[in-house]
Length: 112
Image 1: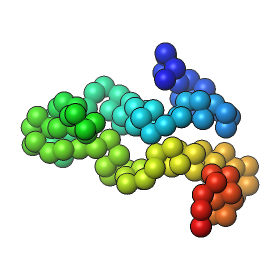
Image 2 (image 1 turned 135 degrees about the vertical axis):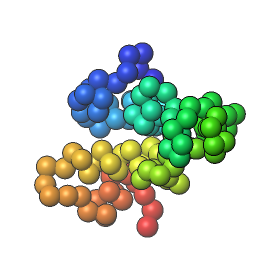
Image 3 (image 1 turned 90 degrees about the vertical axis):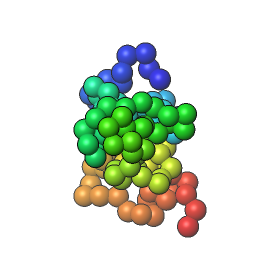
Image 4 (image 1 turned 45 degrees about the vertical axis):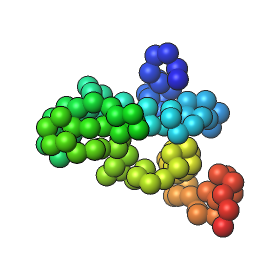
């Protein structure tokens, strides 16, 4: 992780190589999502209480005792984060009206 939080295009990688350097694995993606979702520390989405990080990396709420993942309720729930981040970056950086599924498949080197 970069010592000071990512700045790039204002906390957004400007180039493909910068994206790969910022988010080389799911752990870095999770760390970044956590920072974006709870910049002032964990807040339970169910009751608004604080909590603590568990050994599995999820959060345990001190108020309602629910287990919360940083990806729960987001587009990244149950996905490979590095692939999801790369796909999102590709879609956001298209100069045309969009990106095709086959174009993403080719760029991200995904199977059928």
